Image (cartoon, rainbow over all chains, first blue to last red; front, side):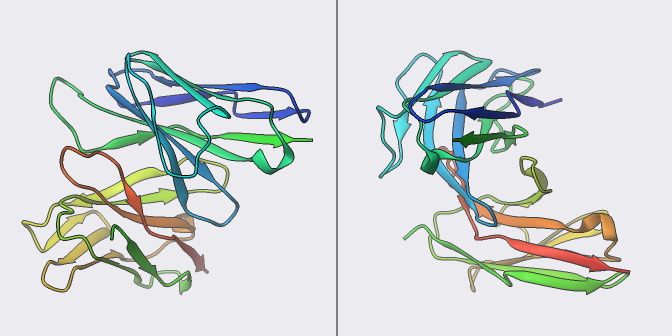
Length: 119
Length: 112
């Protein structure tokens, strides 16, 4: 149980275009989803926290208008990188937390990540 | 300040040896300390986690040692195998907050 999927697993786009990344919790309801960014050989940097049905909370320094997050249901959150530029190239990872089997869990379950390359 | 410091940055251990990764935190409000294993091109996977009410937790070859007074915790991998070669992240969080504060990561290489 507790499987999180991401789609696509990798994407190449041209500078100036927008890219949408989906994050789905497959077998549990994710009350909270998190979006991270990871550069090569570095740690995960939290970009934003999203709760189902409400606006995302962005970390300091993360542009809200550039990284649009929507958490429309308890199993789906999307990250849209708008007007992408080469510096947005990175590994984007989502995680989902919330109740499994009706019990609160500290645990976050991570997706496999999406490699974005902007040319 | 909500930092988690992790060391070493990289570690090479011979097959069958013990791998030890250390983390230190500053915020005494942290009450959940997970370790994650990440292979190249993949998302992190939860390995083992501990609450501050116990000093040690063991799951198979993986053990967390926790020192509340020193605000330190460590991961021990016994009988290290080449398949354990990965990057390991410690993390910490506060009940009700859910946001994880990650360490900087340790790249572990197990050599035959």
